[in-house]
Length: 418
Image (cartoon, rainbow, N blue to C red; front, side, top):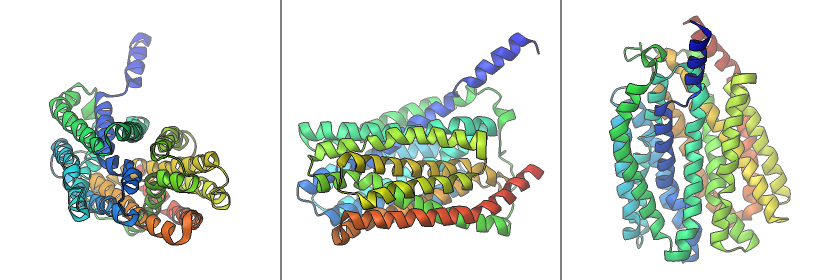
């Protein structure tokens, strides 16, 4: 191969593959349909909804999303992941559109939002399955950060749109907006995803797990590793969504600012988390190359931020936002390690979609605990007690991440033998 050809190949390898861009848009829109309720909770509380009761639909979504991850992960190794994503987008659109019409009943809203949780669960495991089977390991680790950016951009969009909609017409248009975006992308997805596959250069050679991959039983050390990861990711879910879902309410109640202003503070979280996701992937690829060591470091960063906040929670609105921003961003570093980068290590067992769904389900078990748990703790022990509780959770995260390190090394060595 001459130098000119090498330069052309190098340039082509720098491009973000079309399938990555398409999957990033899916994940972005999924976050619009998932966070639409959380983004308007503070406004709904000000309208008269009880704080603990209004948390029930969001908690229900976390529960059904977690259960749905197991089902979706299992099916993702067996049926078309492309069709699963299309179905999930359509159902999510219908559920978002329905919420304003059932808002008079907490039970009805909980039922609708529970179905939305199952719909949302039909996206992440299929996305990982698609990327791990269409991209080389190097391309996967390099490009998967853009999928995470999709979730952050989706969060930014919904937290920008929510106060704008509230100021003009109340909170209900937020759900219509999320529904319209999901329906539009569902149509775009089904019309373009197979053409994106056809354009993918070298897809056959870059497949990491073939369709005929042998499904081997897990070794005992892999079971212990997976158990430690599941506990770690559940703790991460408590921290990530406990901060993200309740930060606007915290700012409103502690510093007495307008609800639309407090909702806008939620934008700070995904902006910084985008940098952390890129940084965590960079550190993993270039320096540490062990997901559990990286996770322990990010749990530590989260703990330091929450420690500062625990002792100075009411001192300054700016300090509180910065501490919560850093803590939440650090949890996204943990999330990147365990829901995305660690998954290809389980390719030896031919269950990448199942492992993805299982890990992500535990993240949302943690989310379910935090959404309702933060409401109860803040109600009975105040926000300072809540921050101390989250600090304890981050310390536990460090412990379980450290426990998993030697077992992850064993799995990596096993893959080298393969």
